[in-house]
Length: 138
Image (cartoon, rainbow, N blue to C red; front, top):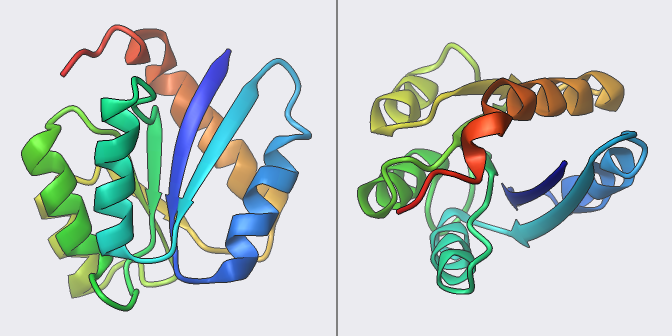
């Protein structure tokens, strides 16, 4: 299957690592779009939707400059209630995570050094709702 992912994270390394590790996944093709803060993520999500490339998955960091992940999640969900947003954070179990989940994030993918595990979790998440992704219209 082909998937479109929007990675919203202020750490440059993640924008290089995620596509590199996703390329190794067999049977799937991934297009990864990047935003470096929550405000840019909200803007990028809207642009992708306008261009007919609605992300199948948004991977959202929590702690970022300009706009944090909880606020960015809230704004994306306001305009696109069916957006599949998963938090990507080392701050699991915090009030900030709780705020983002209340705002509409569907779950959390922990930030760990094991990128194989991270990519496996992303693929499993996509596979969980993947069959219905393309049929979700705005």
